[in-house]
Image (spheres, rainbow, N blue to C red):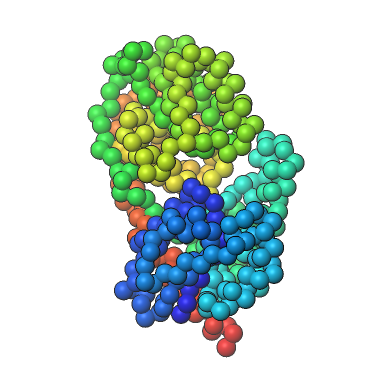
Length: 386
């Protein structure tokens, strides 16, 4: 069988990481009698980040290296013919394939397409239109698919109810976790053992957007210092929505104009990100819209205690291994962080729980389960056609 992966609309970050890892961990010996070749369709930039193998074929087209309009035009007019000459089955890894090739399996990655209350916070017609169009594309993709892959129970239940997908074969297959994030737990000290000269170092890793609420975290850290708690905060992540970046910078300027305790580091390459976890004393994660929060898994593996948004699907993965808060309410964050700082014993308990929990996640497992689901879905599709 010739197996195709449509990654023509994949961007950077987690999408590339996921694709790269399932290919790196692909078990050819296990699948050799069923999969002859894996063909990956994407831009040259993405293909260059993927592993080489005699079993992989990387394919790009001029349109895939141009703007969105060029990609969509080609996907409608000429893409299907190219797929048909190379593939027996197609996996739309971004869940937005709108062509007519079958069988095709879609994948859910982005809950922003569905949690529309966040669109009100975005408040930019052009950005909202982009989400609406992507939602429409995914709706078509899922309607035409032979099966759908989800990466959290939360997403599966939410989207299945929204789009009425009860008759579709589905699976929840979690992303994996790189061993490089596994850290050694440190002794948890009382907050009295820290000082304003050597403060407790919180870390928040995430891109900057309205649903990430970095400004509320900054407000909380500023208030804790006024209350006498020696804390500081490092923010790691690039701005992906300019109004959110401007709002964050304004709040930082008002709370810490001399940049004494708020350190905004911007984007840090994935190859270096584990160093940020290693240098922190505790982790914050304040997002209110995720499909599967890989950053949370990385934090759990780091050996640091975590204070986290109580919005699903965060509790689905962190379970009872963290201190929870309402990310939209700075007072809730303050109250939770006081509990966090005043209870080193609870911190240790949560760290120990998380170290056991993250043993469930590996990219090797993700890769094997993914290709197994796709093969089983293909078999069901062929059986139905007969």
